Image 1 (cartoon, rainbow, N blue to C red):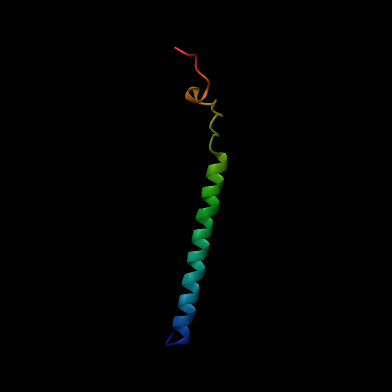
Image 2 (spheres, rainbow, N blue to C red):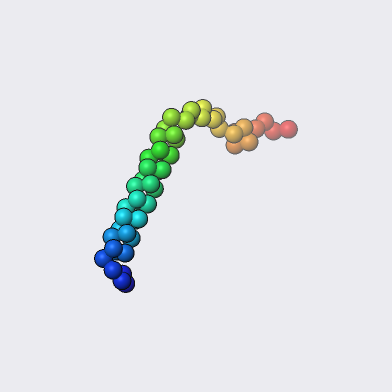
Length: 54
């Protein structure tokens, strides 16, 4: 697959950098989601509650 040792080393270095970059994005995304204001809990929809007979 690889023609030279240098090309194998370059491919390995590229993969490691890409993994580090992707992992950094995932952790940053998770931290932003945790710091985001949480939505207030909603009450049950009125349409699901019993209604008066008309």
